[in-house]
Image (cartoon, rainbow, N blue to C red):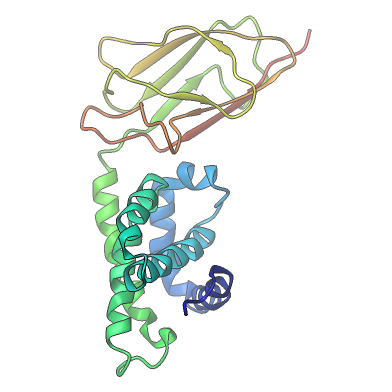
Amino acid sequence: MRWPLALLCLTLYPLVDAHWAALEPSAQRIFAHCKGAMGLQAYGSARIMTYESFVRAAVRRYHLAGDDSAAAPAHNAQQRKLGFVWVEGLAGVLARYEQGREDYARLDSFMPETIEFLEEFAREYDRKMQLAPHIVSVVPDPTQLVDPAVDELVITFDRPMQRSYSITRRGRSPEFGKPAYDEGGRVLRVPMQLQPGVRYAVSLNSLQRTGFKSRKGLALDPYGLTFRTRGR
């Protein structure tokens, strides 16, 4: 009989805590590339992301070992969609633990293997994500009260983008017109209508919609855009 997820959390979280000094450098590097996706799921720190990574990897092992092994491919696809692109590899490392119980009496003694995997993944992820797009600036400045007369949102990227986009509601949304990129594909202009004294919240890309992509096909990490307009 397999353990319930709550018991998995109780087992794995203390392991992460005990080895956090060794796990943290790679976890922070990974988190920096997927902070937006993690934030949309309320995983607001590298440590919480790491807790979830081990739980999700263990769940994948359970799928593969149990009667519901057919669910494993769908589980892996879902993890990638949610931003946990390393979970399949981490589950593979845990499989080595299962096969080497004569050498590793407890998972605690196997943790150096998982640490090594995450360090290597972080190095590869750094290299891959150098090709991912990032936002250079947003106008109007969302950190300041915005004049409700402003009628255009301007987003500047650090590299040419595909001429697609995805802007989803995270609360009240401005009334947007049709977005248009400049000739170089780095600047997107979006007509909008604002009301005074309103807090607006949208997401540029989301877990389900990834229209913002570089010309090399890498998606923008979901970017939460929140601002408030001045009252009358």
